[in-house]
Length: 295
Image 1 (cartoon, one colour):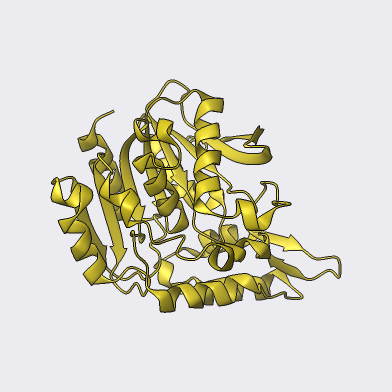
Image 2 (spheres, rainbow, N blue to C red):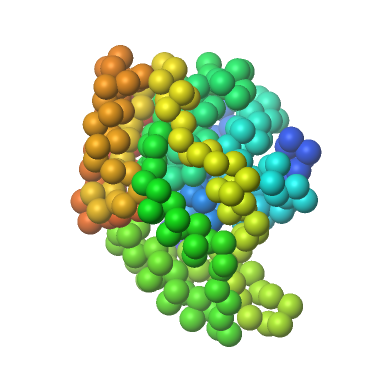
């Protein structure tokens, strides 16, 4: 890695009563991007995006959601693994860092968290903070069959004898991310691996986080939140996505920010759920959108 690339600082704080970890990239006084990962992932998925924006005059905050990566696992999974609590945690993070305006980039679950923050329905103080919202293969309504697929593999994470076997698993299950270099696959694996007491390795998250789907029916059916968003929205849909269907993005054009002329939908070729946000074309697209939304 070139020595002139931005390097993050690592932080922990008690947010909404739980210890949460995040990486902080770029100058502290720069315009802020919050980059939030997907359901079973970690903040390290956003490394390329954070490097890109930090090198171009932005500060980028990349949190680990409760139950993922280096953040605390919830002792109350049925109460805290849900969008309303994630929004509360996001509000506490903004309070901790004294962030008044942020551009939100969220992959999958991270996009849903951004949507409920931008609506202000759960956390009223968050509505005015969201200057723009980028949804990476996320929408106010998700395909149920795809939700069941994700719930099945995420709820019972496999364990392997070696890290190499786990990497092979990740390369298969995350193939829809699109192109990743060998080094990026290795980093994805090493940054989301934990070793079990018996010595095997498994993905680094709390399997109980899938209780979101059973304890909170339709937690991801969030049209009421989308309909009241007043910030510009960019929706990146993986062209082969089975989670965000074309008819849903068409409906988004007719409601809320879409009806107000604030929505842009772009299909990302060669990807399903969800684009890795690691190649220049995707990063430049998001940067152009954020700059057009103002600081």
